Amino acid sequence: MTSDSWVVILGGGSDIGLGIAATFASNKHPICLAGRNIAQLEKSAMDLQIRFGIETSVASFDAENLDGCKVFYDQLPFTPFGVVAAFGVLPTSIEFRSPEEE
Image 1 (cartoon, rainbow, N blue to C red):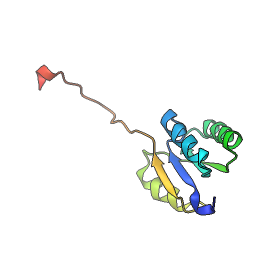
Image 2: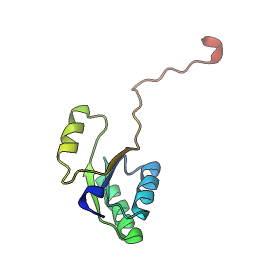
Image 3: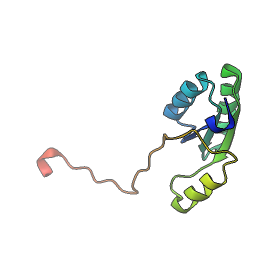
């Protein structure tokens, strides 16, 4: 793979993110796991390296910091082949209504 075949997984510590990362890694794409828990990401990145023989990296990413998203992308040392969003953002308060209340 060339340097332009990197895949960035935002929310790379989530189960879904790791599953997607493994799929790309099995096709020999280098993987950048991005998220908030760097220690967890480093362990997962090492696992991908060992299992698939690929290059990996980790990066700090917080989806709630909207101003930081462009900075994050601009600081990548490569132009990614793809970027996958595997995170969710919940509002601070959620109002649940039963069908009878609507």
